[in-house]
Amino acid sequence: MNVKELAIALVQIPSITDSFHEAKPLNIIRKELNRHNTSYQCIGKAPKQNLVAWIGSGKPVVVLNSHIDVVNAHARMFLPRVSGGKLYGRGAADAKGPLAAM
Image 1 (cartoon, helix red, strand yellow):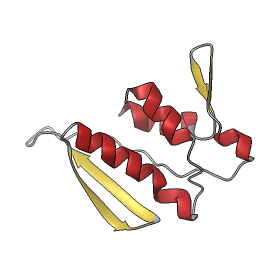
Image 2: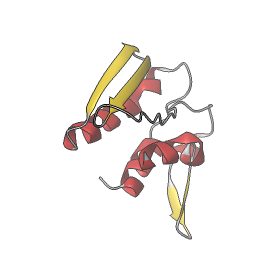
Image 3: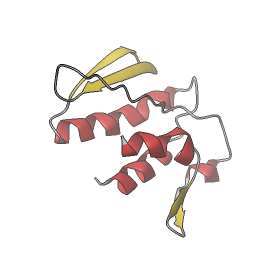
Image 4: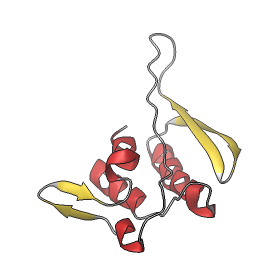
């Protein structure tokens, strides 16, 4: 999956805060990390899980932080669309798009 495909896949999931779906994007993220042989650890229990991934070891250490939950919206907001080279949909800018880029 490239960054655009990953961002679209994440936006399609209604990972509304405190809902059962909140942890569903982690399944996609885990698959991508496995595909790239990237080490990671899930902390906590669904739906309140965190995922920590790392590449390499030693210093310097750089932390990239994001989140996958969104506030509730009309169902159509979870239908991603690309227009003019931009991705639109719930969470596209905050923060599923940036997470896909990471």
